[in-house]
Image (cartoon, rainbow, N blue to C red; front, side, top):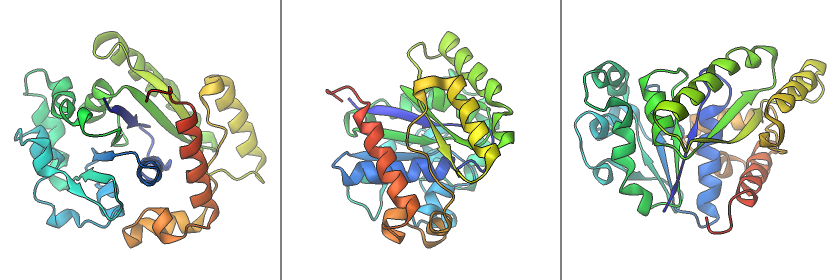
Length: 257
């Protein structure tokens, strides 16, 4: 039975998609069968893996709204063991359309039910908001990974995210847990970055991964080439950090997972 992990933070620009895509890619290279669900209407995970959003016909939208079987919309990526359920601009309307759907918070969970038997890990790239799409992701997920930028504004809204997770646990998914917190775009030279890191560790304790992701130009370039960092520059600091993060993530998993 596969594990579903939502990558969530309502603040944009924190490296959420980058973390979701690169961790899934490295998990795939370690023999884990992985599916990325691009639940963000911006479709950055889709384009970041080399697919044109304008040419995507079957997508997460057709699965959620048109009830298309998930396996008909999933496409293989350039990386062995890594598939994606792509996104396109249609998803922007899904938030409104889902309001009128029965049991609307569990549409994604129901769509992923069979897929759990086909994958070791299903990673969900959530939109930068706490709307109905993100609620669907949290209701479907076993755990949440929260990427947080090591900057002052990153702390703003954190309590809102944690409150949303608590509400989901109370009303929709009692088994949901915080898998871990990833510090992204870290600059050890900046005093404020070290202070914010200390604050985040005080808040989350051992759930903060030891591996932090540094600011790295090669990481920023990779999506424009339509590949994860391992296919762009395997030796850069960003690639080494995501490999180390993936290994740390795996080391924390129960032995039977």
